[in-house]
Image: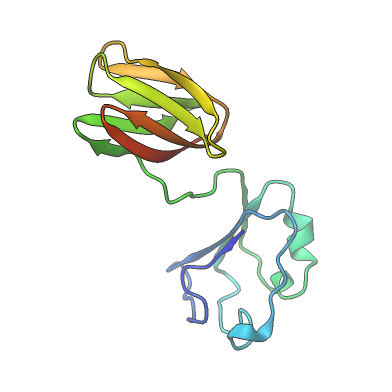
Length: 147
């Protein structure tokens, strides 16, 4: 997954970052002018831990030097509050806050039921593996990421 803020626009130092969750550097072609031509070589580029050598030796990628190795990539998924119930993913758990005795169900992206039950108190934590889930709780359905 290679994610640009805006492809084809000149990126200025500190204004944007490039995120590439692939341990293998994606090929950059000339479909957008000259690939990353004009992009500052000091732009922050977030890559998976352990992939620095691959990026430093890959065509086009080898002209950049501000690499940050991480396993924490943005998903664009945030906590959602609707109907007085807040559903979020935190520290290896689905967290449901706001309403006692709310029915809930947690589904994997492939539709499997991972957990279901009734919330206890105003905060319920359901331990799950890191992934993206669909959660139904308190009459609302949301997509969340758990890390």
